Length: 201
Image (cartoon, rainbow, N blue to C red; front, side):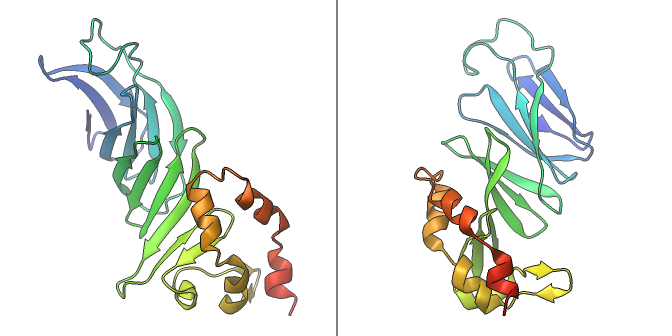
């Protein structure tokens, strides 16, 4: 499989050097492509800031001999959220997608839903932060969190130490990475009121 500056993704028959499928949808150059577990789907990253998931439309195992030519696979969904070009992809054994962007972040995606599981970032001093969509985070140190994010309401900025006291929850980040099997993250997010935490003082 290949991605190109012509904004397309192509699936190839290596033996005959012929194209089995051509996938169109990106509005920018394709920078990375990966097969997903099972070989029936693939993901592509692009300079258009997106990741696209493709149905390869192959009935049998990808690794078995193809008995017919693929006319074209359909796009399953588009993953959006990066603020810059997406230039690296990895497909994890559990089916999730890991992406890297020149916006300075990596994102872990739930391929089945298209949702971000967690966003990761680091700085040159070795500090790092991992944050969930609900706002719970784990970091090299809570004090360093201010290097990575701010909570703003109109013209008011939440003091980082107030947010950290509530949102620095490595335990919930671990639960989120595990798929939130006990609904701990969901329950905590339902009770979270940042207006009270940040702006009632």
